[in-house]
Amino acid sequence: YFAPTIVKTTDLDSPLLRDEIFGPILLIVPVPSVDAALDYINARPKPLSLYLFAASDALARDFVSRTSAGGVTVNDCIFHAAHPALPFGGVGDSGYGNYHGDATFHAFVHYKPILDKTISGPLALANFFVYPPWTPLKFKLIRAVLHPRSLFSSKSRL
Image (cartoon, rainbow, N blue to C red; front, side, top):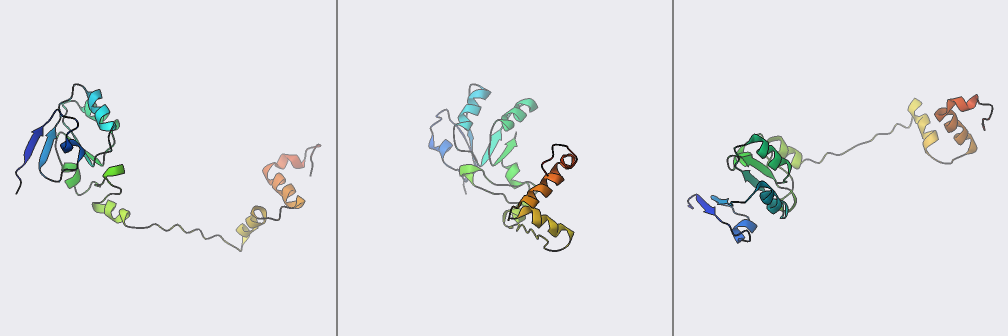
């Protein structure tokens, strides 16, 4: 058992701020301004989780829009990871993909695209225009389809 621990640090090069922590440790880092916090976060690899405590909704929205993390909880901790309806996972160095609910299913499913091109019927005529050989007749027909007025022009090359 490891008791929940709060660590306040001003050493921005502390290993606690560089390494992943898998335990009940909450790091508190006082910063002189919002821009200083954003600069610090954005200068490093993207975190798996980002926690922001702010009294202003506008500040929280601005902070979230100007950072990238696997997940964010505003004015609390861990809940974005524990909520069963929200996907959880990292970005960049903190991991790839998501899990929880539908996100788990989509993370492990390969969607196989299938294009079944018809070789008979009226749509098969399109193959005539798409594939070589490119004959003078094909060019005339393509021009007539793309520029029908050219058929009636006195300067038509058809």
